[in-house]
Image (cartoon, rainbow, N blue to C red):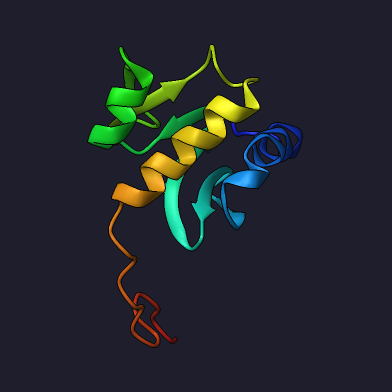
Length: 113
C-alpha cells in the first residue's frame, strides 16, 4: 500500500515550523526533507525518522522498524504524530546531527538512450 497525499500534507503541516520542509514522491512513498536534508520517510502512511543519537535521547525508548523491506531500521513515530511541538523538536534535533548532502554530479545516475 502506498502513502496518500492527505497523510503527507498532515505531516508537513505538523512540522512546518521546524525549517524549510519539502517532500519528494518516490515509488509511491515519500522522502521528507528539512533544509535540503532527507530526515524521514513516509511509507504506508507511517512516519519513519532517520536514526540519530540525539533523536534516540529525545524519544526515550524509540520503536525501530524498517520503512520498507530491506531498509535500515528507522524510528517509527506513531503515538506522538499529532503533537506538533514534539514532532518539530525531533525534526530539529535530527537535522542537526545529519551530514550535509553530497553535491550531485551532473547527470549522475541517468543513462541516455
